[in-house]
Length: 127
Length: 256
Image (tube, rainbow over all chains, first blue to last red; front, top):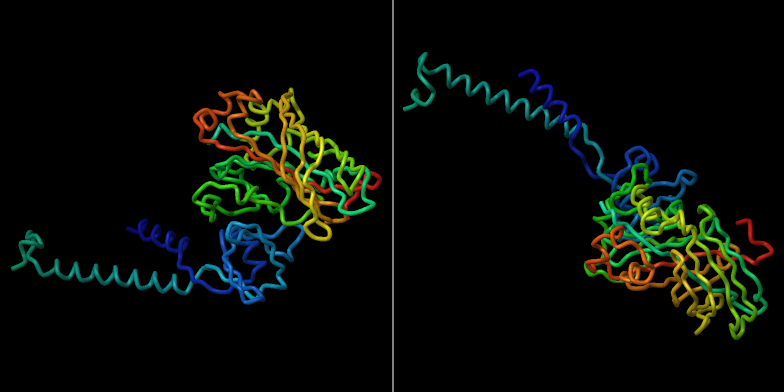
């Protein structure tokens, strides 16, 4: 039981919830290497950029594929970048609700079981 | 994964250049700023390559080696559902950068930039420099298909240019005519080219194509090595081309 609980916690922590929102382009792309980000450009256009990255010797231009075409966008021309990012609060809330639900269900089940006579199955104890 | 990687021939050609009066003369290829590429139709998300994988605009295809700067699944890209040649090559470079392996060398002579008479030249591409982004696939192509140990170079001999027209002030288009030499076998080829001023020189972009069946029928490449892609007719066409920066012969080395 303990092992299962720990395992569930590990999975939840690893996967976790995500939220879509603004990120710091350079830091986020360099550290997370996301498969895609949404780019709001200075000309008010919004594009989905796949494979965003920076060149080793050039951190001023965000590089990626837009509609399958290679594109370099200077950071100075980017208003903001949005992407999926970890949401620790949502993850913690989900965990808390899940644990509480499981615990509550366990209490209910054990309570029903306590009302039956010893040696009588749950099904047999029902009217 | 495909052991039938590819192929081919790359090569090619190009054209010449002078864009205006007084630019006739001898032009050499700036190797660090020049590349050759190939692509099969249909590309199957991996049948394409370049001699300049260092260029950031080249995206390795499916099954690429680890360590690529591109964290993208090419099979997810918005590609035409019907195989066509509208985007040829699939990933052309956006701007010239002097970062390529020196795999393309050559010289173009332009005696007359008014009537474009007598234009000729030679472009040599190192077969061992052709890369698709997966080293196993590249070694297979170089060793068993191109047999680069015995035929290290792919060569395009430019015999003439025809139909040259000026598109804008510093850009001309035309057709380059010459011979492609692959694995010691030559073939007459012609293809469109565009030349324009860029990066302190003249950038020449040209592409040619031939039926994929010619890989075995004409260039005598191994049917066994190429596999079903060619023998069963899955591969339709082989395209190849160059994206070169030419400089006047006297000052051909450095890049700005």
